[in-house]
Image (tube, rainbow, N blue to C red; front, side, top):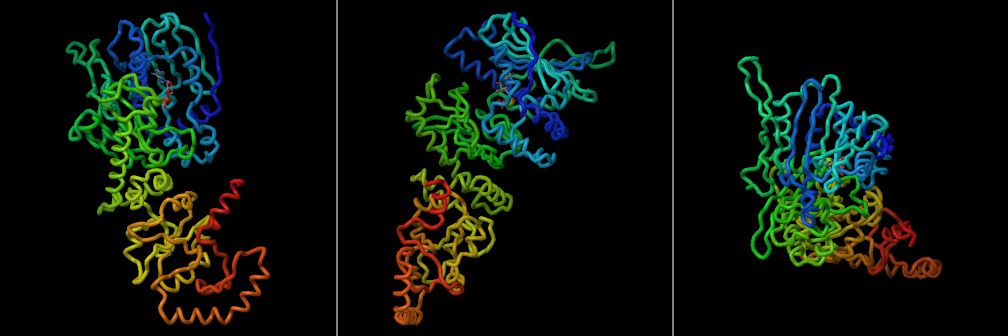
Amino acid sequence: VAEKQTLGFQAEVKQLLQLMIHSLYSNKEIFLRELISNASDASDKLRFEAMNNNALFEDDPELKIKVTFDKAARTITISDNGIGMSRDDAIEHLGTIAKSGTKEFFSKLSGDQQKDAALIGQFGVGFYSAFIVADKITVDSRRAGLPADQGVRWESGGEGDFSVEQIDKPARGTDITLHLREGEDEFLSLWKLKSVIRKYSDHISLPILMQKEEWDEEKKETVVRDEFETVNQASALWTRSKSEVTKEQYEEFYKHVSHDFEAPLAYTHNRVEGRSEYTQLLYIPARAPFDLWDRNKRGGIKLYVKRVFIMDDAEQLMPVYLRFVKGVIDSADLPLNVSREILQESRDVKVIREGSTKRVLGLLEELANAEEQEQKDKYATFWTEFGQVLKEGIGEDQGNKERIAKLLRFASTHNDNDAQTVSFADYIGRMKEGQEKIFYVTADNFAAAKNSPHLEIFRKKGVEVLLLTDRVDEWMLSFLHEVEGKELASVAKGDLDLGKLEDEAEKKQHEETETQYKELVEKMKTALSDKAKDVRVTFRLTDSPACLVADENELSGNLLRMLKAAGQ
Ligand code: ADP
Ligand code: MG
């Protein structure tokens, strides 16, 4: 038998505990949501593993979650008969944070508690949130399939370390016992616990059981009976019809699947029938995750087949440019033993991905085109958080390119500020008579774009120019040549063709000027022969004496700088 062992938490866990206890105190009841969410995940995992090994159910096939408390001992216990943990699992999952990008995340914390508190919610607090109300936590667990004497007891006071020891645990699964801090006795009440569960965990598809309470005529008080009742609806939320689900329930379910702390921006819930049969419940978060740009990050879709959980992060169900979408897809067609490899090839998956993409774009269009200010603000938030990712869709998703283009928002000389609010439709609606093209300038940052000498002639003529300063813009533009039949043209490339915007008098004057300076231009060409490909008289400047211009088919100055910076 292995000895009791004391181990230190990973440095980030210590930081998380510190910060969380202080910053989430006003929201402390969420610990119950987090622990029930984990119990539900553990049951999903058991059901999944048991598909290939029915023995894992032992003689206890009915999955459930029990919440009990002991007034005298001042403890609350959350029990599940899910997958459970081995000793190694407990050390790994309850002593470290497995999320990718954890180190980077913690290095970004400022030390300013208020700012960091907002960030911590975004990171997701999970199991450790129990330390907000408990000064000691005991976790007794046994992994499904291991013998009864291979249980583990994990215990910690939430300071720097935890202990693990081997215990006998006949019942599979996990019991988490919270020893409440001084002053947290309000949770030692059936009524209180039930109301917290109904508020945050009603959507959990397993039954959550609590004891019944009864008035005792002799004692003249309510007493807790040994009989249990289910306190939640206990049906998978996405299988309910829309009219039966409240906004709050949708939002709590989002927090469960996304491990996010904030409410989502918007969601869409549909049952699709026909060629392929599936249910989708998809959410757009209100805030970009800290690891949005992490290359190893997978999508946020949980895949179920006929209500059986199959896998987290099923990235094949969403295109990469919609990787911020979270939610559940439940297919009626896929086989239960589907693997990531099979998903890659599957026709059904392709149909689901296309259908889900259309739904998400539809949801974004609804926000973008809404009349109500609240919806409009939501789109503005969406654009700030995820606009750069959506732009990847212009290159990635040829089939939906036009729809995506309509969702794009830019800064422009019309507003002359860096807020990206102008759509192509706005721009086209303001085009001058005789203007044929949509003009843009690209630069590293807003100040550079706004002050570009290339804009002078446009400002003079009152022609609007889009100011593009995101890293992905150049790449995106290589896939986007026209919108609504209007060509996109860089103000910094090639011959500046203002088309009909130039009147006859101007043209004549330009020709005269060119003749006048012919000799000077020739001299400059010779002098600059190893530095410039060509020298021309320009009419695009009104204030600056000269500017550099890229060839029509050449990489632009901005892209060249980017490639150089990347060491190309
Ligand atoms: P998350 O749920 O986002 O993974 P948590 O901090 O909530 O993060 O939980 C950490 C990990 O601890 C889980 O991923 C899981 O591996 C393990 N765990 C927590 N609670 C349970 C449980 N009741 N049964 C089995 N494993 C659990
Ligand atoms: Mg969790």
